[in-house]
Length: 198
Image (cartoon, rainbow, N blue to C red; front, side, top):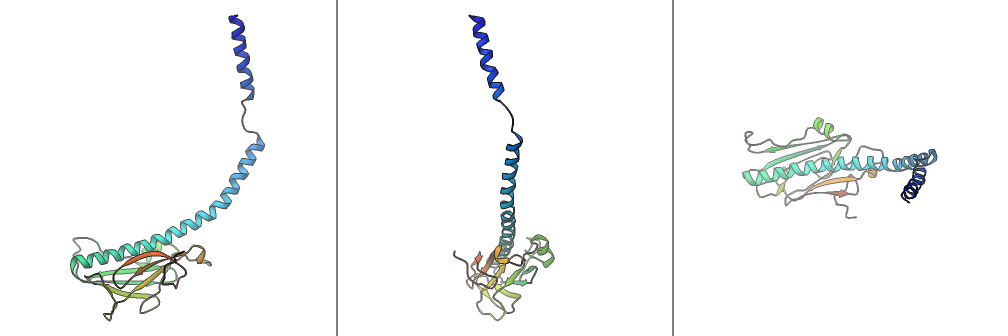
């Protein structure tokens, strides 16, 4: 009886071993083909996502630096000047507090070479200002924004990708209002001064 039970156990194990096998060549080829199709669809989308992330990062850096200038003006009681230069392949900005001690902290700046190195192929367009490629304004200790003539002003700086079809990657804008509000948002085109609400 004991031997029969042992033989029965051995027979029940052997068929299981026969059923265990690896992938066939056809199954492997189908798997590789499916992965290739998924990658062919995903890679262009990943590239678009990376370019959009770079555009938004550049706009976010400008927004952060303008907010620094506003905060410093309010804390110090002195106005801070901001100058932004846009071009077809880069962007740059200079922040100049009226009074500043370098021993306390560094003033955020962005030179054109530094910008090109960090945000390759991401030009900016200054939409509102005294010139189409440059604008300058001051943030006062009350947080208000004034132009060189002492008039309350606003500015819009749009970031995009250097591309034959920049709309594919989208446009991102930094808006500076007369009351000192600074926001960053998607916009419809390089010349738009409105946030895209869609």
